[in-house]
Image 1 (cartoon, rainbow, N blue to C red):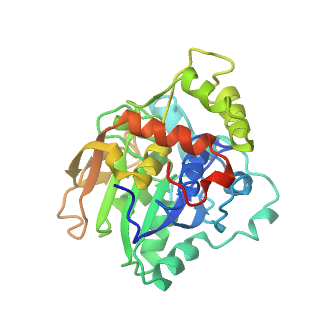
Image 2: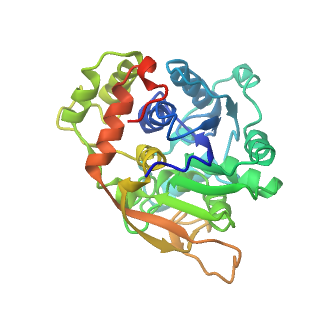
Image 3: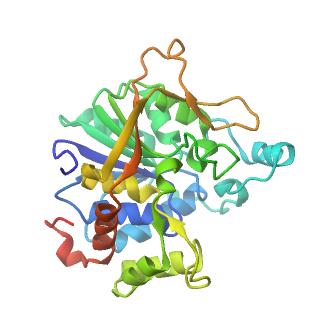
Length: 331
């Protein structure tokens, strides 16, 4: 079963130079019969907002389908680099700090042409007679701000990569990076009344291993996208060209694959979820929701297993096909 043809999609991303965000965006934009992407909003997370926005524009420029890009939040609602330094000093090293470990470029002129991400989400939802699906593959700052500022009753579905139920964190010991970077935003979104929420957390992502063999299959096809893929996955994370035995994981790509073909989800559980926002060693951790605190909250469908063959079929097909063959075709 394909993603709902009745819904339009907004992608909210904190992409690096390519990585899992870039792969997820490529997968969706090369599956137009399964996913109609109305626009992409960017948010600070893996990198400062100006870099994220530049990276996203470069990726989209290599594709045939080019939805509008709008820059959103420059920083989380509360969390900041100084707090991250305190966390590392008090409670142990942080595995990944993203933009907190970076100095934002002095010039932000490049953002002027892209500003208005939060407003874009709100206006797209408000102005359409069709329901909207939001794909969140970065910190949820933009989505939380939009929910707080506007009535967004036509968001029918939120599909997101973020959080961890039982798996160890990849930022601090208990929190996944997207949730850790802006825990308050994640809490607002999880406590919201969006009718359907689908979660791809570290628990399921850790079961989908990206190997050198799969990497080699993709880069064997020579296109501008696979060259960008080769550089990023080969020389950065997981650095297959430096260490052939390296192992990576599919993260944001799983959420994108789900919007292309929902049958990739082999098992799931319904849970009411919340996020720890008390500043401490568990900052950003996913916990069960005390429903008295948010009676309007809807449950989350937590995907616990995926069909690996279907996932990698979608993944490899979308990344290796040419732009000319992408339009009007299915993976």
